[in-house]
Image (tube, rainbow, N blue to C red; front, side, top):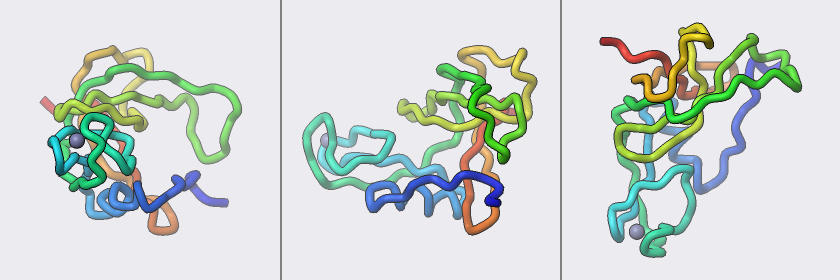
Length: 133
Ligand code: ZN
């Protein structure tokens, strides 16, 4: 059994997953108006441009919200685990896991930072942990 459920990768999101293998958290930026967007998609919701580039995030942000899923239980997760909505310093949000913290200690607004975790089969995922001082 795989150690982790792999993401669905499409032509629109491939750059993001490839970036993780290089330990880079990439964000889509519209080439027309400069607006950042996540999750990746073909068209800018601001100016409707189809042209875009990727910028590298600092990997720093804060907890915008979080949940702790309980059911259904997956064999590849250790429970409890935290699904976090990250408010990145660049201004966009993304979903990840928050690790290296007791769930009772998580607070909205706390500073967190990305790290990268490799799994079987060429999969690298972005994970977050409390930011170092
Ligand atoms: Zn735009």
